[in-house]
Amino acid sequence: MRRYALQKLAHIDEHYSARYGMSMIENQKMIKEKGMDEFLKSQTEKYRCPSCGDLVSVHDGKCYACGYQGEKPLRKLANLNGKGSMGTDQK
Ligand SMILES: [Zn+2]
Image (tube, rainbow, N blue to C red):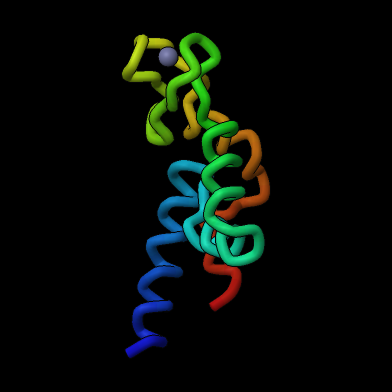
């Protein structure tokens, strides 16, 4: 049961990493290690709108509070992941 759920999570995580440059597993690790407060704080910093201070969408980098368009995560990822992470390198 548990193992299945983890596999599923890993699969979803791959998707999110590939698409949005974020990892749910990494997030969970951080929550475990540093606590929810720290995690939320870091997320808030990461996705804060420079214009109004609200949170921008992780999906398209846009702030729906003021309409600010930040850097799109997809684009950022293309630069970061030069090493072919579409990967089936490991199972
Ligand atoms: Zn804003």
